[in-house]
Length: 259
Image (cartoon, rainbow, N blue to C red; front, side):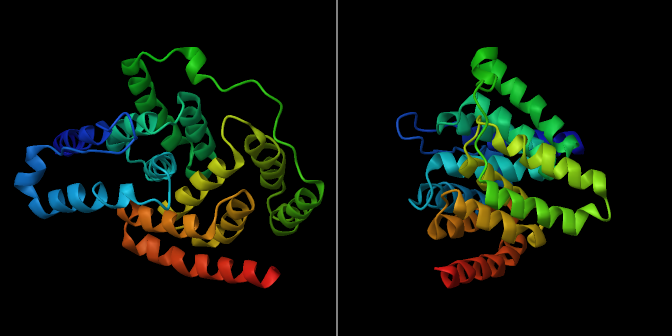
């Protein structure tokens, strides 16, 4: 039964990778099996999801691929990843950026999900004939830190985590933020995008305010943030998207009050 379900999913989403190479616009052609079994789902997929949502101008196709892949990795949806990794490459994601996305999300969705995603990415990269040089991240100096905001963040971690789980506080400060977030194979905005997407996919609304504020500090606009949640409703489900909306409202209002 599991094999049948996986095969059906791969038949359906293999079509997702068929995009217009010029504009990066997805042009899916779902398997006839989907139309036979769930004709209304077929119609929503072709006419609404890919015919409308993916074409909305509020987010670039590359951003949509980033957050979709992040949601799939966070949810352990490996059967859906092949088509979306291909689509991401067609939408301008570099192989090294997809590699960095998987590594980043090991910290936010767990090692098992990231390790499973790595296997799928390897298959796609091999199929596309990508070289190790294209997949490896660039060797550059790490992103600079703002001393004041970093000191404030560290103090918050020490106060809330350090007294209970001191080693977790150390890993949070010295590995997660002082190392991973400073790597240049993804921009700070990209890292914020995939973190917000992963947290939304997992229903981790308690973690969203900090990371949504960080995303907007890193260049995400209010319009784009709202569109992230709208897009993700189709990939993580309406309940998780609706649960994220009050967080967006709170963050948006809080940032207006600071101006």
